[in-house]
Length: 627
Ligand code: ADP
Image 1 (cartoon, protein in one colour):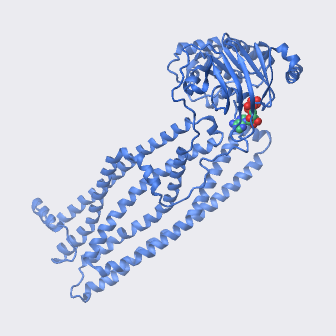
Image 2 (spheres, protein in one colour; image 1 turned 60 degrees about the vertical axis):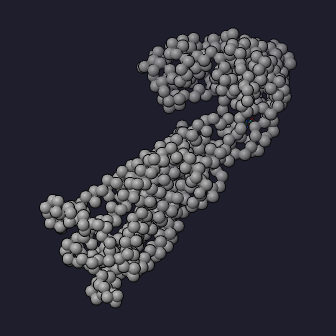
């Protein structure tokens, strides 16, 4: 059953296409996201503790270098304005314990603290990434579950390819967001610790350094604004490139047969060129930014050396000269002050993108078409006879005009009904309604007297057998494709079903028989073979009611005979509704329904219809001419 494009009246592609507000921080959204992250709260806590350990150790390194080594050990300075956090005492204790010099003990300590920084940092990142990935894989699964539960009416309004790429990329963007959020925390904790140490050491010098911060902040912001649009354009052109490539490869035969290679190449080249221009410009801006950024921190070093150097040599007027160690300490802390500001700028674009991604994911989760699930579902009898009655059924897709009007019919149990009619007359729609893929606003469909709307849809479909025009192949072997993973269908039963429809001959000739893996979309099968497999699949489930959309493609007479035999076999003694495209099928049916423009023109045996239905007489004559 192919699904033609929805009519104009039906709202299309509302999901994933709605305008995204693009806010930088959407608290509501983050709060919702938290619901998925909550189960890993202990991991986040551990990662938070680790980042604190790392930050403290990181800030202690310059203190060790400048206050302990330079001031105390090398310069013999005893009163420094900078607190030493007990590191001097620790160094002497270590020297005593190991029987080494103070200098050696200080260097040893420096090495140990450095290792602590590395280990805590690594452990923090691994824990965080692990926690984030766990939460997001749950989110991804929930989105998938939500999507596969949507009724057919949902998919009429959504472009499938778009959903797939969006769900994949948007979850990826959220991962980046959460990971970089952790990284930012790792940058800002040392920022504040270093800042308070510097303020304690020398307020004036700290303020001089801080004067550079707003310059860096504003510059970073401006650069990011500039690159944001370029990167967005680059991303768009990349997805356009992928789409073009995909379309061309999927439709390669058409492209080659119509000699469209040149035009398509030109189109591809143009998009490729746009992409190159945007990437190059963005890279150009990046390098300028990088250079300005590092020059700025070097300028700050120069300023500190100048003002601090003066204070160290002549004193700053307060009577106390700056120690050499303090001066070194300041130059070492510059990066800790500047790094987070630059990092914040780096995260700026990411934050925007991730917020939009989050919004789209939640949009997908919120958007659904309500499915009527009966509060107390009627149980279908254990054995269905398969009597079908359709009563005054009227149906329209979306808000459009009705494609079925007042359709009524009766199919006695165990008989075959063929449906014929011009394309677009509503044949597929009718069988979709019988399977409850859509919900009719008026009229009823009853199986053995039970209204299908009163039955749990999943239970109903288990009793129905569907053979669609396209035999959809899933990744797996021939056997997997017959059982579709249903544990109730044993290997023996699947093989028996294949034998019954005459599919065993070609299957056993395959290199691995029933275990032969099927290529993508079943490329390694012929049209006729696919048809036989579809029959085997449905026969294995032993349905009470069979609905079959006959393949329209022409097959050779030999395969035709094979299919005919298989068709007889699977419809034998079973209520069957067949959208018929071949005269043989019509001839075999107990009765034929002629559908024209969504209305029943006539229903009866073939001979009756030749008299009563002008449409049937015309179709009949046309097919005979073809034969
Ligand atoms: P047939 O099977 O007889 O060719 P269909 O039942 O497929 O006819 O289509 C009947 C009418 O309903 C056509 O006008 C078709 O365009 C429209 N239609 C079919 N499927 C959809 C859909 N998913 N959304 C909107 N309109 C549809």
